[in-house]
Length: 401
Ligand code: PLP
Image 1 (cartoon, rainbow, N blue to C red):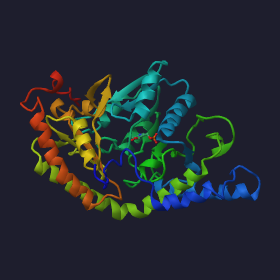
Image 2: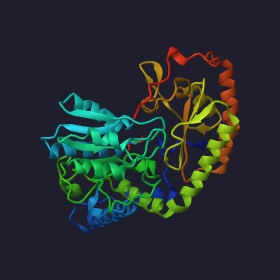
Image 3: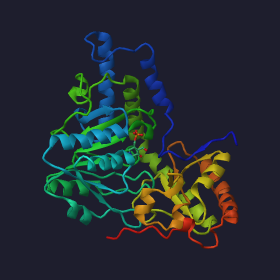
Image 4: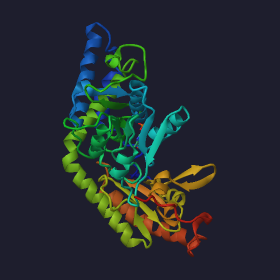
């Protein structure tokens, strides 16, 4: 194990920015007031909350009154979907995609056991969504369409503005899980048809355990947590002042840095990707033909297992993620790989590298130095490298449209 960490797993979580850490510190110490208190001491913290709300709103091109602070991206997703179902109790249908994060997918699966119908839209081989399929899926009783802005595994970006317009044309609300998009792509909700948008602090250099939900002014809303009057009655519970301040500061930094940093991050990502494709035979970029986030690269290496690559890279100080999930003891390609119909021989050997504003040329050099010999070594010992299908399975069934 080396001392040097090459952290390329920023879609899993990001480091807290030093400026963010600095901004939140006083609220663990001398500034401990409750923002709801009548006295000046609480009132001071209310002002900090207001400022953070304005900063988050500015990052999204929204109004501060449209921002609701939550505990995480998952809570924002759940709040949005439950709210739509409660606000329109006569509507029993939802539309989402097969490649959503479990925060949306598992809620939808649960809702199916409660009498709701859910249509799961597929994606093509590049991970792209078909808007025609969305149009066809809508029904008079569709309460909400929930489509992620960008996929956490592949970074593929969906046409959420068009999807929102289509949802509205049939009277459905539109929610987007933008947890992976906020801070990485420009977002301007001022002219948008999007009704609700989820974000999560720990994906943009704020701490874990803070999120926000944008709710367009005038959207029918039903709270998830009921109790006190915090967040104008839309989410009860004493506000997490330090983390809200942190999210506000992270939003300011994202807005300041996005323009210049995204180009640099994309150039690093492209160098990593092209370098690996050149150095390693039988490698492919999943979603490489689609519009993608600038920081994400999802690469499939044929005839090797993602987990083995990760373990060997981890010993070299390189942190990344794999595209497989351990389901009942066996490693299955992720639901995203399955939906894209990635060939099984590649789907098992997928690695996600995700960069951030803190990624450096040194990190990319480390990947280009360490990954090719790791793949070569694993292929030497792989019983499947002679072309036999992995785990006796054929290619995933691609989605057609
Ligand atoms: N949605 C997406 C697309 C994500 O990538 C994640 C986290 O990985 C979440 C939702 C959940 O966010 P949180 O960890 O803040 O609950």
